[in-house]
Image 1 (tube, rainbow, N blue to C red):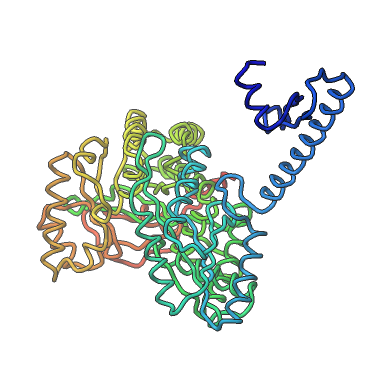
Image 2 (image 1 turned 180 degrees about the horizontal axis):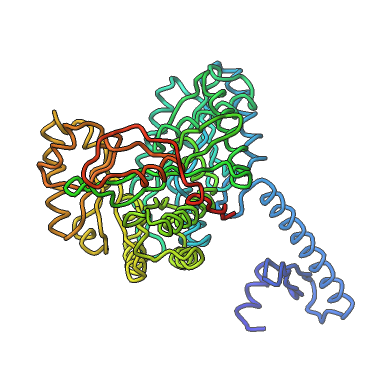
Length: 525
């Protein structure tokens, strides 16, 4: 032993010693030893083995303790985000309720759901989705107070307990803080992702006095926030439970609608008013439920986007419309093409181009007889992806139009990169066209822009002769709307094409005689 170390031991009156490391999971944790303060000695093998056994026993006990602590943590926390899970959240909620009942103060339960998270997960993969959840967790935690509890409820849904509130405005401030915190882009997978949230809020004691009622009512308020267009928060109201119940009923029926052949297509013609020609028929899906009747597309399309059924429904629409176009083509009735809307989730499918090519080949429809409509918002979600997919579709021969143009946030520089054939002016600008000079200016700008890029410009939602004539004076000749024809069921659409005069078009009643062989298209699913 070196002299200086011996001197240090002698200061503590230790003449000789024996130490053995304590190892936990293969790593050094500490040591245990024997010492002799009287004589310098050589330790026996039996003494050494005893010490080794003691060190091993201590190491094993510590390892078991660590394992138990880890198991206890895993039992009450989410492995991805580190947040409390449902079990721990329920305990925290119960404790907060007891405290609120004792103090008489307000408390709140909040459900938070990330909007369109499934689209990101499906498009960029689960690894990016997991990163997004972790980054979101950090931002949410930064918005809360020390006494608040946030948990991961499951998937992209979070629950929050807000105790010790003075007024409902305290909750509003926190909800607004969360909304603002999620506005900046998330830099993931080499691109900027923008995420919003929907929040439902229930207050104690106003909206419930027990945990189950508060959770149920906060969840109902979340449904309302989604129905209001997302990216907002809603407090519970007594009418919301019935609305949530109706949505759950619709969701249940929607899962069986395809297999029960409850979806049908209606077709709305698009006209060139300069020639009187029908240029295309746009396929629009309708849900005819045997008990609920005709369900509004604005209701079930949003529901299908949430539960993922928009993908099989969208594929059914595409295949059915293409098959019907072939039937019309064989009868000499097909105008230039049939148009189909692609949902945002459908457009983000990695194998979208292959799916479309397979359907066209299966039904035998030439690609130039199909026009695909994508919304401006969907196109701008991932610029590089959109550009690549649109070029592949155009090379295939499929026409592409940008729907609802003017309502999104597209940059003109990006618009130039997209290989589009047409812009469809959103109906919101057409509605007040005759009396609103601002709408006239916007429409005129879109028409000038479209023509400058060699694009066809189509006005949607034309419902009066004055609107039609005003648009025509602005050099917009492609139009669609109730002034010309409402969306027609298949039989009526076929009859319409049979009786259509190319010289002019005024709204008329349609005769009911029809060649049924023209619409005998087998159901593709």
